[in-house]
Image 1 (cartoon, helix red, strand yellow):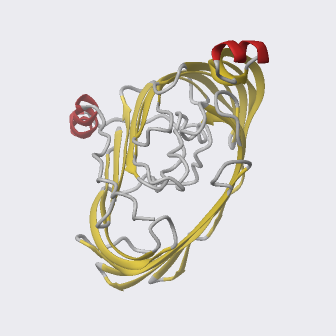
Image 2 (cartoon, helix red, strand yellow):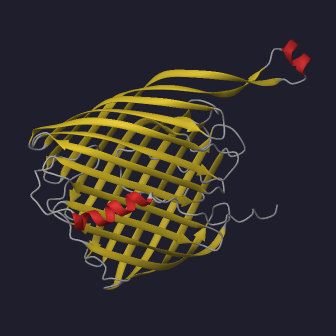
Image 3 (cartoon, one colour):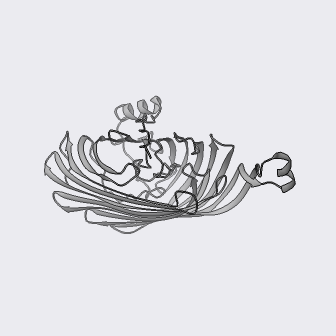
Length: 426
């Protein structure tokens, strides 16, 4: 068999110009002023920092060589780089995280633009834009968020996927202990493989959070998400009613829980076997029918964060409804993940992750699949601006049917990363 055609590097999905202008100029335009005490972490993002970070701008560039056992098995050379920047003020914070990876046959891009603006003593505006452009399911992963994060799809297919999610939240601090958040986000997923389904949609959400104890917060939330599948007939609405609880169990430990019920209403087209008499008249044995689905599903997420000095360990479990990764419109997912970030010495750092997930499609293309991923990145500082990097990634897919019954992939790479400004201390 001949080599598959090269995947042309795709453009990075971009946030709107208005969002860029607001989040860049707002820190210098807003007047400095006192802030009310913040609640414990909203949602499932741990909030164990005791002081605001300092502003910084850290561009970096690296060159790596390695081996990939994936669809294009063999050695590879890659240029990695990006920009990590934070602009912090007493009433506003802007964080920009851009990453890219370039190989001769493909490219990967990721952008996270996050800002928080203290409009007044009681009002806070939070804006966020996440975008990625990648092939082989290699979309960069960013920290958790309350918005909908589409799945880039299985890496078994050489398919470029462009994803953009824009979020906005307006938070009203009714008192030191109580706040109300109203927000929404829009998302779009474009998959360049014709056999995969694209999706567009929006989400509206609201939550009420009350800190009834110094280190405990109770939340009540509602979210409504609308999905449109642009390459096939069908769409879906998904409403979730949930109760959350966040508790700081100790100086370095936090437990986050969210549990509720989700109501799914969807419609689509599926293949059916025709009656033999009708099949004889039409000359075909299979046809298509429009179906409608209405189900109730448990929706829950649990997260545990533990700090060990400057090391951080995060464990999460979840059961929810999400995008089907292009193989299906929507899917029921069970997820488990473990992440570790730890300094091994004043000059070395280890980041590791382990995750497993099961899919069960709910609509058009019925399939079950199990995926597992693991990997680590080990970095060692060679000078104030230079680091040596070793990374390894393993992924495994198991499908219940089809030619892609199972698939696994190893990637290992090593190289040097140069920081244009002095690298942060460990």
